[in-house]
Amino acid sequence: MIVTEQQIEQEILDSIAQNRVMLFMKGTPDMPRCGFSAQTVACLRDAGAEFAAMDILPDPRIRQALSARSGWPTIPQLFINGELVGGCDIVTELHESGQLRELVKAAA
Amino acid sequence: MAEIREIEELLRVALPGSEVSVQDMSGGDHLYAHVRAPQFAGMPLLEQHRLVNSAVAHLLGPGLPIHALKIKTEVVQ
Image (cartoon, rainbow over all chains, first blue to last red):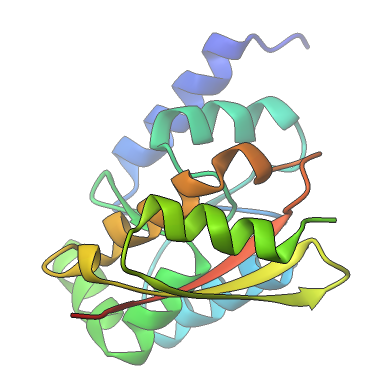
């Protein structure tokens, strides 16, 4: 099946709109394929978050479209209620300060 | 492979008055930037990190010298 760039972008927008806590990562939550993605998943789980995830690895255009949209260069990227929260470092800092738990609780 | 000193200089130029330290975490393409800057005062964490990322944006990404940039920001007066 041929997927166009427009379809990829729409898929990204839909996933951000439809999931209050949305993580774009390398691999899947149960099988992350990058240490930064794994660490971000661990923070979310520890904070009690229910979240959806999209693997950006199957098609390089996913990452291109996502970064063009968010203005954020690296993966993972966490969105809560449609807003970019940040990458692994920010999520980790928010988790360590207890703010991540508050953010995901408020989003639920 | 990214030049550490060059990246520190890019960050200092982007954030005048900042204290910048960049370290290699593995193989020269996974870097750690510790940036203390007056510009961060009152700024959300996301925007602080955006400033750091944008200073090195042309070097950061797939196929570019920096693959991963771990960032720690602090406000300095």
